[in-house]
Image (cartoon, rainbow, N blue to C red; front, side, top):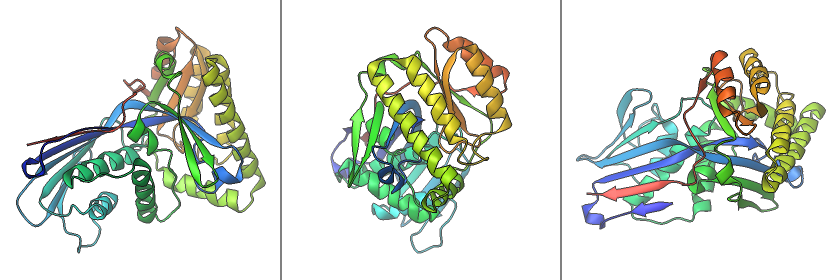
Length: 341
């Protein structure tokens, strides 16, 4: 994370931005304790240059003005009032002790409900902006765990960590779920080659991941044999993605990613849609090696690993199916904060 600051008494404007992510494999394994029940579990993901953006301006008054540019509303927040339209944002502001004297505006480069971990990217950008306002430092993993827990409190269901890590660190990451901690590994040796291999497309249907994740979470812990087996297969395929990427074998990584997706679809009939199946078939015919829905799927975005030189062919095939190819590429920079007068 990069921070540019001036002295506290002069701070009147704070801007922060954090990248969203694509999950190449292993999503849902970050929901504790799934990732430790299935031994050696990991998630592989990559930050993309689609940013959540936060701008905070000092204002007069004993209130906090919150603005969502994406949804077109604004309101004044007082901690004693009932939750309003952005309860998670309100929770984060309250936790970091910024509840008056600022106007905070939020906007995103990515579609709402895109499955790209957008709410987590917004949370990271907001938390880092609030820490800058308070001129406080916080260990990055403490920030991750705090935001995870605030999200869980807001949604009232278990939440994971993998969506918060790319916005903070940037780059391609392997997150290994160990007993008592997460081992975060940079896949920096892979990063330079990803741009020509990754395509991301929005299906034109937003989704809400929390409901799907909670259902599979409950089914796994209840011992549903079909769900448990599918999650075990997802974990195994993700190990294959990880190893293949580290070996520079994108052909094998694509095959493993496709296996991850085929097993993920077994978790719930809501994970894939008719349109997503159409996009999948068209992309594979046009030169994709692997394809999967992002996040909990059921709409949102899809990510594709493609053969070298076939990126445009795959993009055209996706567009013919009515999806929108997102103009983005892997991003090696995590959350950036700018502090000025």
